[in-house]
Length: 212
Image 1 (cartoon, rainbow, N blue to C red):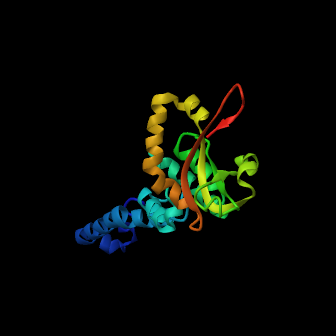
Image 2 (image 1 turned 120 degrees about the vertical axis):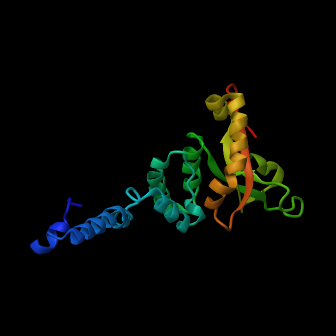
Image 3 (image 1 turned 180 degrees about the vertical axis):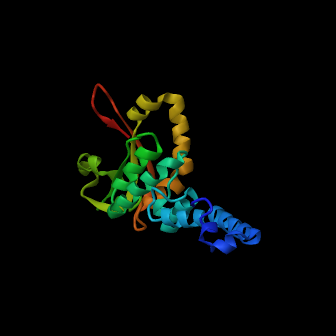
């Protein structure tokens, strides 16, 4: 606010009055320290990139569990929220899950894998055999035809984990996955889908074969 702006709005006679001058000085101080910051905060709430941190946290909380964002860098929250708002169009697909793993766990590649079960429920009751799609063809000779269930797992490559984190860091990562799953990943899984846990696999360099 311009210095002595209110005082200069007084009539010439009132500007000579000490009482009026002190009153306008006090009023301008209140406007500068209380009203103007509130007006600026309200104006900044028009965009997630300019709003105050507490307003951004409130906005994220109001949006629901799907928009939960965990980050130690407060400045990155607007960008992360913007990405999550874009991902709402892909809710029910594996994209939010995969991208969240990339963000939350240092570019960790993960894939949502639907599970299949044998159609022969007499010899193989539902719940006894669940396989990802890449193993279905191989297993048909033993189990017969398969059908797609409403269950799924999150696949992670042990080879990639060893390459990126080593053994000790990998153990820490497993703990993080377990501890943060309910808060970070679970809200992204559709309610009609049953989550069957993590599915770790490795690929033998010599045989190029996946081991589960």
